[in-house]
Image 1 (cartoon, each protein chain N blue to C red):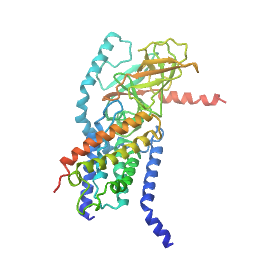
Image 2: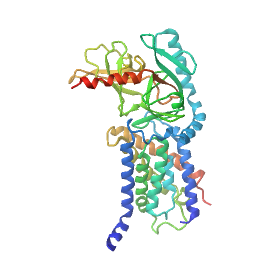
Image 3: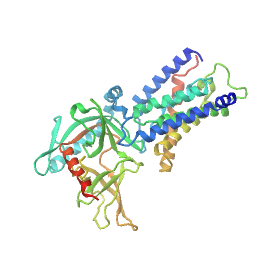
Image 4: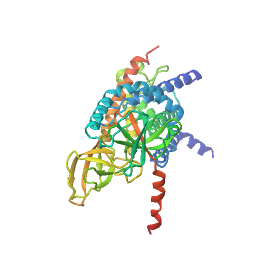
Length: 171
Length: 278
């Protein structure tokens, strides 16, 4: 990855952070106050060839930046690190027979709807599971936590899939 | 030595992962709760400003609910002037205690950030130490008690919401004055439980629960919740009571900060207690 690629990643970081804290954090759906975690798109959209340790560090920094705005020290950071840790494994499971073609990106337009749905849903669900388990710090209110995980995954997915049609087109 | 490096290189991914995860958990454990306000950053100048800008737009979405509540409050004021309500619209409002002395002062504030979805929820207000806000002041909405200030900066202040697993407030029944602890269980943002009310008290659905005034944060008699359900426990002598918050934490936008003028004096006096407890 060259300098230009990192510049792109930095601008994506800032844009997603602003969208998350200024717009999406105001959405609270239902009795449980479910908020879509749109910023997780950052970890999803990093290029295939991103070194694995860079993935972890970027994931942590993204989560931490959201934490700073939400007064939740470590909560988003921990969940996003967990998601970044799981990404190579999910990519491995979903890999085409000949591996990922050079020059493709993990976007819906490159990889197809079904692949992208599996990929994003798996990672977003890992993220919200980690988030809510860290939040209650255990398994109290099990049904509530389970409900929150499922609803957060669904609402986050809606935003992420939409974003793919709006901003991540093929050049 | 060489093989050690090779081993570290092989497991570097796992090592970095564990390191970052442990770091997150340490922050999570140390950072919340009211005594440790190190990470309470949303009261910081830059972040407060960003939320201020957002609130300028988002604030409009809650106007309808807020208006309805204000109309209801106005109605209450007209029909029952003895209730603890704020009737005028000036910046500062005052409240006298039973001896006619000025004991509580109310400072008007806007909520610029609020949450109801976590286990420990916080509220950020648009005023800070410049207008006299200090930690340990209570916060009330037009409907009732809403939170307690935990940290202040010059222009912003951060309060712990009543939707919080760490702190309960001392509350009593308005009709009979029996007191207990009001606690949020972390599930539904509309409901809490009231503990320690003995079995023999006469309860009715819809009874008002008010602050006891024992904690020097809230004045006595400030409405908090109404009784939704109650049941007698067979294994101890206390009721289990489910109460509904009067404040709607999902549409909180205008609040008052309650300044207990003699809080310091009272705390100092009550600290003497320890001398007599052996």
